Image (cartoon, rainbow, N blue to C red; front, side, top):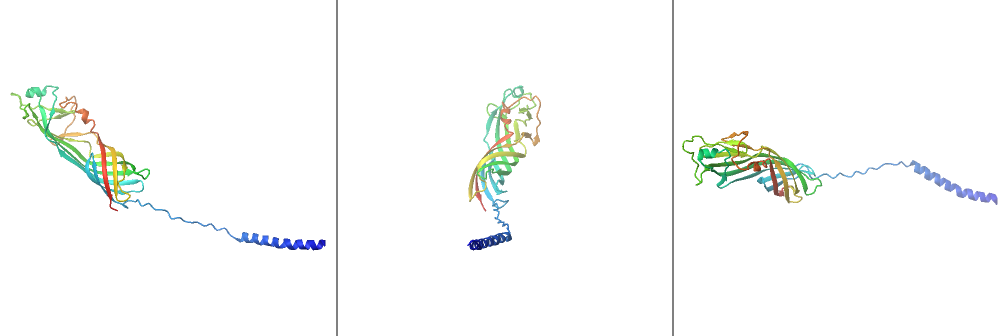
Length: 274
């Protein structure tokens, strides 16, 4: 009986052991092969000249046209031209006579009766940086061109006629403009004020896009253009600053000191060609 029992147990255990051995051998014989799944990288649609937009601008630099293309998702390149020009009607400017040169020459202090002509023509190359790929952007670049204000007119008496020298006086007096000495041709006085340098750096910020997501985009921009010191020319020659000069134009330095910086306010409508 005991022998029969041991035989039955042995018959039950042996198949299980054989199955375990077979399973283990099978597992040991299977090699683990690493599998790499390559996910295709999404390419940016914004590359140089992948899109082209044209825009119409109205700004404190005048009206202008501008083209824009992306550099990448964050940077956009813009280039264009702005122009503003107009002429004023005749108006009078009161003069000061701190040294008495007008009284000595005319017997009174005349007015300067003048017309003004403003001419701004500037090309521009600008880069917009969109830090979050949204509509907010920072802008830097340069404006290239000459901004000029021409004045032409004459010294006038109380009746509005050209001033005449007193009897016995042969030399025409001079005028001092912010330290620059202006000379007269008879009673006539013409001069050109160039507002700063030819190459002018620009920094600004704004909202909107120069390149539309679909077809049409709008942008608004604020910034400052650094023009540098102005220069004054008469008869085509640049005038130097005269030391200890009197001032014929009252408080003119209150205005000229602001000419180094030109404010930029820009509204722009753009259309994406492709």
